Length: 197
Image (cartoon, rainbow, N blue to C red):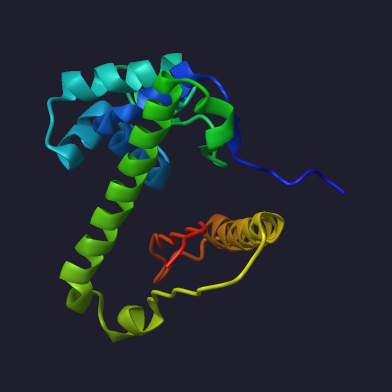
């Protein structure tokens, strides 16, 4: 049985620190959703100068998060980019937070991800009516309060990751087969953490 593809696990603090810059996080997320794009296309979406966006894309490329997309430019002058891995990336706090610098970077990136995701949800809520009833009825928000051990929480995470990968592959296969009618990007955010009331 082939090995299940997994996101790259970042263990090098210098690589993680690239995403303490909110613009780099935003560019990476936009590029991941688009598949491929030029610095100029991304600059329009983030309302920044193409030269600044190009600079940040080159920095992400130096750290192997994005690569040049070959065969995209019609005249060879435009530089097209894509994420280096469709599986994305992740990190464990325990790998990186052993120093004050590491703890600060982990905190900044985690908070940046949370802020970015919350902004995405707020945008959907603001535009909800424009999506129509089919999409608003399908969209969901859920919360479960569970009593688990750390090992059980890790097991739950593994199961949810596998479920997400299955649905992502289903969408990719449909797009590859030309089934793109009524297909949209869908963002699913999951968090699992201990708390004490």
